[in-house]
Image (cartoon, rainbow, N blue to C red):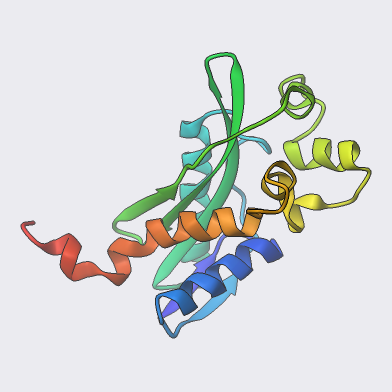
Length: 176
């Protein structure tokens, strides 16, 4: 099996490696730099899902893989608060499956600059923490949870859920 990943972000690649090991799947994979086709910081669940799907589909076609994986982080508003979440899409070119969307509340000092167009969340977090490229390390999830959960681990859960229909087909084909 050949799996393509619609990103060259090291945390996203590590997430795919982890999930393959977790499911005891032997596969080759290739990371492909593709566009999400959505804004740099998706602001709704629909836009974030569309970005994940676009990444999965584009990487599948570009790499001529059996499965394409798209991982996308985004924000969504719930009442007057903003939340960060990760969405993953897996596709075989005919069907697709989503996973994830566990929310973590963002503090005002992180969501307000994003809403005001001062950069995507990773850029804002870098400024707040006086660090560089935090989205390729523990990310906002790690910062917000005191490192109890990292960005990579959030993508791990998301991918484990999204890929289930392709690795456990018998369960999903019952009654169809």
